[in-house]
Each structure stands twice: as structure tokens, then as C-alpha cells.
Length: 277
Length: 291
Image (cartoon, rainbow over all chains, first blue to last red; front, side, top):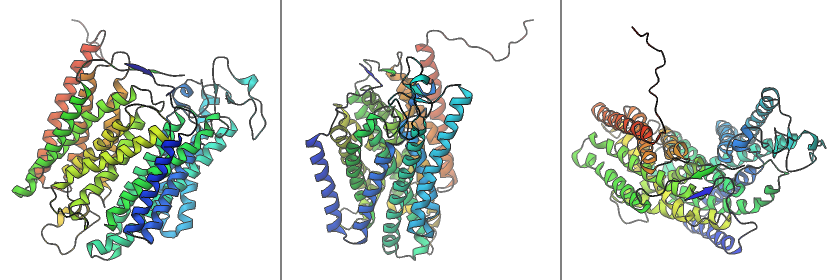
């Protein structure tokens, strides 16, 4: 029993039956919560779904090179999609959670900036290591010309590789991906926190400020859990390496967006049922 | 560029591993209920043993799933397992106190944990297989198994920390059992963020063993022994954390049992590594001067 680790046989295009079943599941989850508790809890579930979609979409921007990138044989950051997305998203999530008391907009902006900043620093250090440590120039293997700067790659690309380093477009994509991931993770956290702050005091008959650590703990661990679920589903969609928004694999994102919406709806419903039932 | 993932053939069939893991972990979690029956906390360590059973089974599931080539690396399977497992587990601990469910006994929690985990995991598997188009035959079953593994691992380790698997005990500081006057939510397993540490301990333990052993010479008993070793290593950390929540004696008992388990499995793992290695040199860092 042996199989190749690089390319899963994942089919192209959208599977109509699977997608239809997924959308039915999504509607069931939304409907169930609307029956149980319309109002705040229902609106929060919508927010959680939007957050999950943002994470799933944002992961596709992050340039991932995997093990080949560590050997300078493909462009991107030398680690897996899940780890990178988790790093960017959790950095954003912690930034946003810290700013949660300053208002919804500030917290969301904090989350987005936290995630984007983490990716910007990572991409910068990756390029420093590639250029000054390994002595290789940045060249994309998927396109001949950088869509933003217009630089050509052909002359710099080593034979037998799929490109190397981290071209400017990949850098920009990484920062956008980090911002979207941080934004989505923070949105999930804030929506869950709102629900728990509303319902937990009544459940335990204690004042709101006393229950706040519990609300923060629950919302935090659920936000991390949902972040990882969404990041892994997006990673399954990418299967291996992606250079950034100019990569042909980027066009697969609709599948991941639908998948993440369904997964977030189901997970979010379970997380909210915890307090409304 | 791809790395070949080779999986050993033979060994124990996966269904047998599944059965042993599921039954073993459930029995161990139910044994922690003796704490309530005997009004003590000495049996908290059974929660950790439940987590070891679950991790042992989860490693074989990951091996089964990853032999199809996910393209994303082995750790992602551990991440989705624990990410969905924590949601299933927290919801399950609340089952006995929900208005809509007539059963009010906490004994429903471990079974409920398995059921909720199976449903959530199957839905995620369906999403990965049919919406994202992975087309892997064992995807739905494997993700359902992994979600149960994640949920039981967190439930077991959380039980080991606090001595109980009921929601009210996990969210309320257990040092307040002298009187109910001020329940301190900040010093609880969930409110204090201890569950986040348990989450990461479980996620690393479940994915590490196969990630470390995969390759041309992978053998099932060695991989599973490493899984058990990772489980006991997590147990040691959890036993140290449990000093803050349960009685000193109970925490010491937990620590001793996890340390014994870890030393035994680590030694066994070394023996098996030597058995599977082409050659073994007992090299010494500093050569002694020959007389």
C-alpha cells in the first residue's frame, strides 16, 4: 500500500451533487439556529460563517512551498499550508482579541493588521534567507512576468526547478492572505464572545464581569478550533504548493469557500447551541 | 516534487485497532466516574489513559488516511481532528444539563462525545471529499474517526486535570468545593485557558507518531508504540497542570503513573527502533582512554 504524497487525485471543477448537499446542510444549520434562538445568536452564526469564508479564501493567497521550497526548488515559504495559515490567523486572532474591548471595528482592524504583519515579516525573512543565505534569486515557475512589477523571471529560473525564492506578487499575496485570515479568525472570535457574554450570565446566575474569563476562554478555544478546521479544508483544496494569487490553483477557491461556509455553519451551530439550549 | 509515503502492510487490521481504541478509551473515561462514586480524586489518571488509547487509535487512522496522499502533509490531519474535536467535546460535556435532553445523568457525556464527534467528523469528511473533491474512499470514515479521537483525547485530558467530565466542573474553579459562595470561573479548566494547552498537546501527539515514522521502513507496532509514548508524554504535562486543580495525592498518583507509562513505552520504542534499523552503533560522545 503506497501512494504519492505530492499530488492527490482531487478532481477539477465543482462537484454539483456534493455542493448541493453542502448548501442544504448550511441551510439546515442556519434554520435550526433560527428556530432555537432568533436574534443575537442567529446573527452571530451569520458572522461566524462570513469569518470562515474569509479564512478559506485568504489561505489561497498565502505562498506555500513545502519541503521543495526549503531546497530552493519551488517558490514560496518552506512549510505546509495549515501551519502557515494557522500562524498568520492566530497572530491576527490574538491581536484582535487583545483589542476586543476597544470596539468591533478596531478589533477587526487589529486582527487583520496582526495577521498581515505576521505574514509580511515571515515573507521578508524568507526572502532574506533565500537571497543572502542560499544565494538564489526569486523567480516564479507559473508565470513568465510578475503581474505587479512586470519583471521577467525566465532568465533567472534554474533548470529543473519550478522556480524559487519569493517573487513580489507572492509577497503581496501572502500579506493579503494573512490579513483576510486574521480578519476571519477575529470575526469568529468576536461573534462567539458576543453570544457567550449575552447568555452565560443567565445560565450561571452570576454578574457579567465575573463570567467574562469563561466567555473569553470558550470563544478563544472555539475560534482556534474553527480556524484550524477552515484552514485544513482550504489546504485540502490546494493540495501541496501554491505560489500566490497568480497561481493557476488559485482559481479553485470557490470549492473551498463553499466547503468552509458549510463547515463553519455546522461548527458554529454546535458552538452556539452550547449556550442557547 | 513529491515525497513517497509508504505504509507497512500487515500488522494489526485497522478495525481491530479502532475497536480496542474506542472501547478502551470509553471504559477508561467511565472509570474516572469512580471519583464521584467514591468521593475522591484519585482516579483522575484514567482520563489520561483514555487519551492514550484514543491517540494510539488515531495514529493508525492517520496512517490509513495519509497513505492516500493528501498533498498537505500529515500534521493537517491532526489539526482538523483536534479543531473539530474540541467543539464536539465541549458540547458533549454540556449534554447532561441541556433543557432539551431529558437525560440528566453525567454518564451520557462520554457516549455523547463519541456520537457528536462522529456526526461532526462525517460532515467535515463529506465536505472534504465531495465539495472540495478529494475523492478519497476512506475520507468520510477517517475524518469521523479522527474527530472522535480528538474529542475523546481532550475529554480525557480535561478529566485528568479536573477530576470530572461535567461541564459545570470544567468551567467552575474546582477549588471552591468547600462552599458555593463565590464560584471562581477564572481558575477553571476552560475559563483559565488550560483547555488550549490540552488542545495543542493532543494535536501534536496525534500527528507526530506517523509523521516521524513514515518512510520505507515503517512498521505498525513501532509507529503505534511512538503514539503511546507521545500520549504518556502529554499525560506527564497534564499531570503537572493538575496540581492546580485536584488534590496533591491525586496529582502525584497521576504523575507517577504517566511517568511509568512514558519510561516503559520509550524503552520499548528504542528496542523496536533498534530492531528495525539496519545497524545500531552505541556511540559514546567522549571516548574513554584505553588503559
